[in-house]
Amino acid sequence: MILLDNYESNGHSNMKLNALRILDHAPLQVLKESLAFIYAKDITRRGTDYAVSHFNQLKSDTLHYYLNGFELDYVGHQLISAHQPGPGLETLRLLTQMRPDNWFIYYRYGKALLESGKRRLL
Image (cartoon, rainbow, N blue to C red; front, top):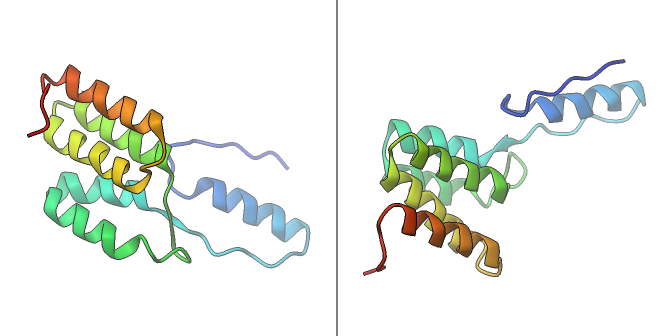
């Protein structure tokens, strides 16, 4: 069996894992959705307030959703690169709240603020 991966395809890794589980005669795992990618769709289609609210509603449902900090960081920086600094910075700020013990997240957020011309947080 040959398994190929396209990182940007949502859930592909889960499908590969379940394909291997079928070959091993093991029970299938529940396929989880990326909370970061749902947030990305929400923030671009419905705005920051809706995206943050929906994110907060779904984050405790770990049976159906997973949160990967790298994916949320990626979303924030992609929004900034797409000339949407407001939603991008809000995404990175949200990540600092989700992972307050991670210094690297603060570094990336601070760097993005500086590059966006925001030198004060008031």
